[in-house]
Length: 221
Ligand SMILES: C[S@@+](CC[C@H](N)C(=O)[O-])C[C@H]1O[C@@H](n2cnc3c(N)ncnc32)[C@H](O)[C@@H]1O
Image: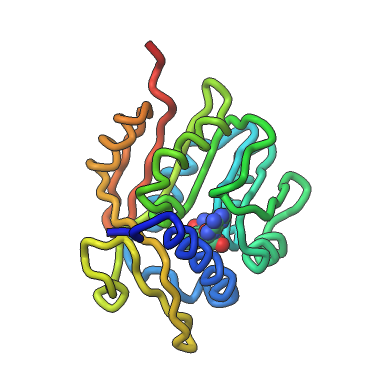
């Protein structure tokens, strides 16, 4: 379903970063043409990401702008300098700190009230699912909250290793191809998976292929 060994997985995750670095300039041309995007934004405003907010895999800063409507400050992490350049040109800088880092190696330097990630969880391979959520836990204050948005949409052309694989092929507009991870999470299964590793998260579907999740660590004991 995913690469056979750790070396393959590391290579795949490196290729995923190379893809996002290359696609940065045209990233927003590839937005999915489906309904439901506005529902995600409305849900995020209703959630009110106040206080110190951490955004993982911020990309070109589309969500950073929205987070700043509520947050005291935002720390936004991404592995692509090209994405961070676009994000820093887009958002007001006073309350934002951009960090260039690989999330599979990065460790937080503090605790946050809210951790947000947009269209990132589906790019975390299942082998790294639990360790990613353990990182999220380490980033949160004891009463901290999580909000994420994502989709499980993959085209037939992308499924070069078949429907059961979470390795897909994405192309730039010029045709250059890259292998990346795209896990097709389904809201109900995702909720259960998160419950099993100690989270209490409700995952909501939209009218299109998008979903959002919100919650926190399950109470201990
Ligand atoms: C699908 S984009 C989402 C961007 C943004 N959150 C949004 O919703 O528009 C995925 C982002 O993950 C970043 N990324 C990929 N691999 C990463 C890694 N190992 N560590 C940190 N960021 C990574 C990419 O550079 C890209 O900006």
